[in-house]
Length: 373
Image 1 (spheres, rainbow, N blue to C red):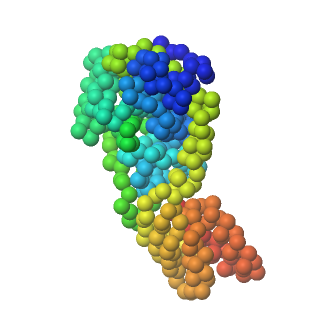
Image 2: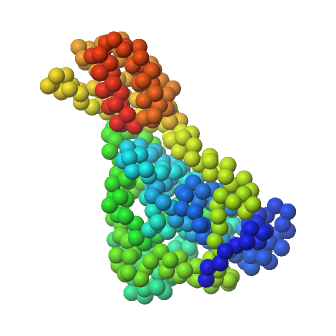
Image 3: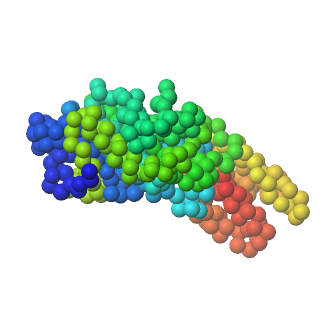
């Protein structure tokens, strides 16, 4: 059953500021099921942060359903250059987000359901949540072979991953979130979650590649709506609460005071890229000298998303050493990103407007550099 919260009631139910614990517990009747009306990844991740930071979850567990427009979400300690095809994502307008939980990279679209289970730290139980999802799936399709693994994934027919898990455990509260592949675009998923970048050395958490499959491929009745309703029903029964999926608007400050600042922070370059663990790139690319190929070697150290060490080595007859040195020094402390490199290139090209050959080579070099970002 789907209902929409009034602003007044939703605010009373969700915000524990100025609301007595007993009164809140009374109103939520032991728990709550929410669904976002937004498909914006940053807004939905902000809801997770807000509930984790502000809710009194003692005796009041929450299940939150959310789906996003095309986006890639990486774990708190991951390297986006190592996890996905950033150039293709930019071309296709696919968003990149970094969540606050650990785990691996996932592709989201409207065919992928996200479920977040909020509890107190003492009630945190990932396996119990996954078993609840399995029971819900079997309610819709009793013949479905889905099992939870020791890694807290869900496997279909013993081999295809349909759900991955991540979590965040705070001082008193915790959440476990997982995905459920219903009708995701598998071709896009495969192409975006494959990094084309070579020579990366990093201690960041690496994703573990898996074979995946959509539930809808197994049975046409396994739609996103049917699955969310089934999980909601099992959750409500388990926690003995009303089986209502309550619609919420994540950017409504009357419901979630201060939430828009959380969403804005999740969109910043400093959070998405700047939180990447320190890494290095040792690679090379080829340029043409007339008809002859030349190898350009590149070594870069990146910390907090900014270039700390840059060593571009080009044959001296193709590009003078002093020109390479100037380029190397100008990259220091700049963001490791194509936009900043374009700005830097345009600035440097102004220093040699009359030397068309040097201008051309410098431009080629910078375009190649942008290709590894």
